[in-house]
Structures are given as structure tokens and as C-alpha cells.
Amino acid sequence: MATRFVNIDHDTPLLLPPDMRDWVPDNHLVHFIMDAVGLLDLSQARVNHRGTGDAQYPPGMMLGLLIYCYATGTFSSRKIERLTHENVAVRYLCGDTHPDHDSICEFRRGNRALLESSFHQVLECAARSQVLKVGEITVALDGTKVLANASKHSAVSHGHAIEQMQMLEEQIAQLLAKAEDADSAPLQDGLCIPEEVRRRKERIAKLKEAVAVIQERAQARRAEEFAAYQAKIRERETQAQTTGKKPRGREPQPPKEGPEAKDQYNFTDAESRMMKAGSGQHFEQSYNAQAAVETDSRLIIAGHVSDATNDKQQLVPTLGTVSPVVKTIAAVLVDSGYYSETAVATVEAPEGQSIGPKVYAATARQRHGRTVAQLEKHADPPPPAPDAPAAEHMAHRLQTQAGRGLYALRKQTIEPVFGIIKEAMGFRRFSLRGLAKVNLEWTLISLSYNLKRLYHLGANLQAA
Image (cartoon, rainbow, N blue to C red; front, top):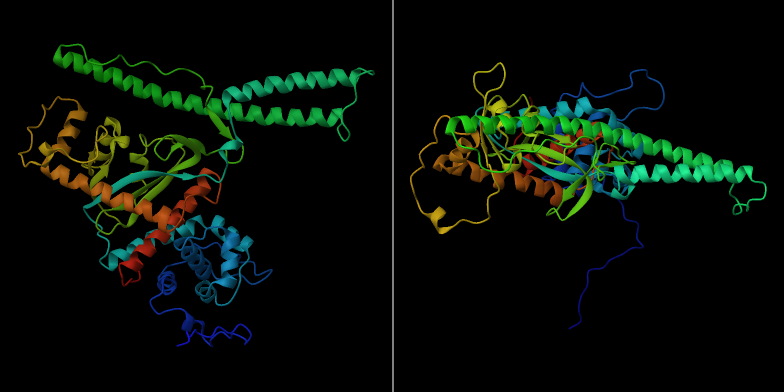
């Protein structure tokens, strides 16, 4: 019996249906995002009120376009413009209009207030829909490295910059000497001495700017390291007075002055940094993106982007960006990279408040898996003495049954969120440059993730 195939006819004109919604299923993500944006107060949108020039695209449509495209893995403004022609769902969202990439990029860059307001409003809608708790919640906090919109090959180290400036100064002197020598050998065709001198002077000016920034960063870093050094000295002195014994371990060493030879500056995005990537075996030009996630709903309730290469100083700033929709936090779960006595004390006893959230932080790296002894049921260990170091009190907190149960939520809460953002949504590199703009883009990513999460939870959003 002959095989039968479906007839594919490319010659007969293919007409769209009278209503494009016939090609977009009723339960499609685009409907959910359009409905959600329709619930938001968009008064923070940046609009040209002069009434001149071409008609403007409605802020609701532009915001929905960005959220949908970010939620589905398209971040480039040129690619988003292309989708308004090629993608039925995007074409339906835009009402068969086609904003160009300049309009899309300008709307994204110029609407920080709208994106931040929308982020908080979506969380308020989630709270009204009983998806997000707003009091005495548990929060898992972590950071992830996201590539900057800059190549690491566009960077220069402090040591190399000094060497390059010396070499360029020598070349300029040689070129000027050649210009005064009438018998000197001519340059290659198309090259002239004044142009070569000018080009080298411009390069020196850029290198001097890079060196100045590196030195300024080194000075700020030394101030932080010196404060940490003094804190360690005070801790050892207190321990010696309490126990009457010399503290174990090496004496802390004061930080060195001035920049290190390997300190770098990137000419494409000067505010990005070289950071350890992957398992720490290589470095990439990146930013450090922070997020705080509510453990039950797995919604992002806070976040910001830092240029710090590690998380040691990020606990307090990240919790400082928690949405006002969340009234109170009961517990904060962080790994050992965040632990410091000062940061924990600041969070647990905030200025002007009687008590803050309780921090559960590992004080050292924990091995994967559990030993047989850890699997056995046993009573909570006795608490350390009241005058014991803060690290001992924190370690005891995580050794109790309640502490172990809470801390176990950290990894299963925050890691999947970063996995979805990087793998499912495909966001691995910022499109914008500069710390202020990448913070704006991280807000857009968090907003898009939250709406996609609410969609998959089947939330029935209610207006704020």
C-alpha cells in the first residue's frame, strides 16, 4: 500500500485568519502577560507630552513586549524588532505594529522608574492572589555571575598599562627625532609622522585614565580590607583576654597599599570586572547579580547588581532592596560566601528597629552529601558560651534540627531560579553597559521571571 503524506502547498496564498488570536492558544503566556500589564499603574512611564512628531507607542504595549521577549529568551532590541514581523504571539501583542529597535532600546533605557514600579506591583498582585506571603517569610539569597557586554580582551592590567605608556613615550620620542632628521628613512605608504604621534598620544591618554581608575579602586579596596584587618585584630585580642591563651592561626597581615599589577580596567565597559567563572578555573568580564527569593512561591522579592567579585559585602545591600510589599522577614538563608560578623549583626539588629530577621549562614564550605553520622538522629548540641565568638554561635545555629531544616531550603530555592534565568530564559549576558543600566536590566529580568513563574503556577492575578 502506497504511503500517504500530508499535502504541503507553498503555491496557494497563505492567509492569516481574521483574528490572530485564532493562532495563539487561549492558555498562551502572551495572554497572561498582557492581562498582567493591564492591571498595572503605568503612570511612571516616560512619555513625550509635547505632542510633536510621530505618534508614540503605548507604554503598556512596549512594557508587555519587553517582558514577553525577555521571558521567552530574546534580549536584543534588533531581534525583538524582527519578532514583531515573524512571531505570531509578538505580532498579536503589538497589534500588528512594528516598533523599531531604536524605540525599543530607548524605552528600555529610559524607564527605570516604570520597571521598578511594575516589579513591586506584580508582587502586590501575587500577594492579593494568595501566591506570595507578605509577613514573617523565609528568604534565600545568593549571587550569580552574568557576563558583561564587553570582551575580556578589551581589558588592560595595571602593570601592562604602565609598560605600554613607557613604550609609547619612547616611540613618540623616536618619531619626533625622525621628523627632525632630514636623512631618515621614510615611513610606509599612507603613514605620516604627525598622525602616528597623535594616535600614540591618544592611546596614552586612555591608558592614563585606566590607571587612574585602577588606583582609585585599589584605594577603596584597601579601606575595606583595612577595616576587616582591624576587626580580626580586635577579635583575636578579645579571644586572648577571654581565654588567657594566644589565639590559634597566623597573625593577620595588613593589606598592601596601591594597586596590584593584575588589577584590570575594561575599555568597553569600565564598570565591569574580571571575575571567576564556572568552577573558578577561568575568568570572564562580568557583573555579580544578586537575588533574594521567597522560599514558598520562589518569587524574586529583591535584587541588585554589584561590581564586587565576591559576595562578602552583599548581604546588607541586597536585603536593602527587598520590595516594600513584603512586610517582614523571619529568616535569611545564605551560604558561607556572605558570612561576616558585622553583616549578620547589621541584619539581625538593624538601626532604629528592635529586632531584624534571623540569619542562617554557613561559616565554612560544606561538603556535598552526608556522612552516616549526619544521617543518624541525635539531639541538638549544647549552645556555646555567651561570650564565645560569633562564628561559633552561627555554627551552632545550623547544627540544630530547626536550623538544618531551614538551611536545607536555601539550595533548593535559589539555585533553580538562577537555573531558569540562565538556561530556560537564556539570559547569560547583559545587553546594556554600566552599573546603573545593568541594574535596570536585572530588574526587567526579575520582573519577567516573576510573571513567567506566576503563569506556570496558574495564578489568578488581582489588581493592586
